[in-house]
Image 1: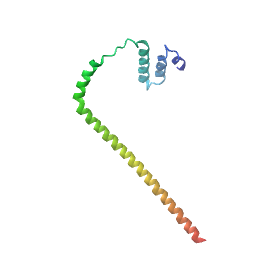
Image 2: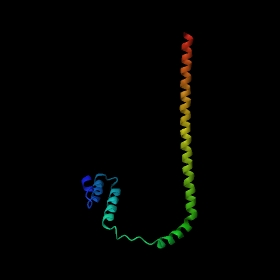
Image 3: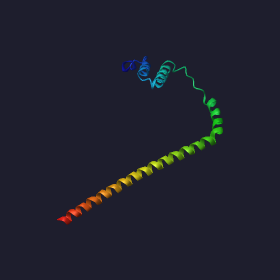
Image 4: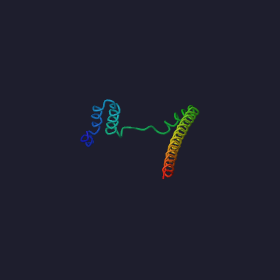
Length: 120
């Protein structure tokens, strides 16, 4: 596959051979091979539409979906913020537990040293 990928006109075949090896990810490999092949053979025939043709439908869709998309953004921001708070809280709790454990170990060592000093 690595040898084939070095040949410019056949490098898309490396993705096809990768798809043969990995059946689970085969659709991804086939899609990549197709995109590489189309990009190599037809780069100049692709005509992008003018911005005016795209802008009008996008403006209309944005007015229709404006409030809905803002609501989704707020929900997503809230969930991200709550997950950050939970992660921060769990990290703080873990750190506090570790400190408490270290303090208990330190106290046990001090008590042991005091007992050893009293025996002498």
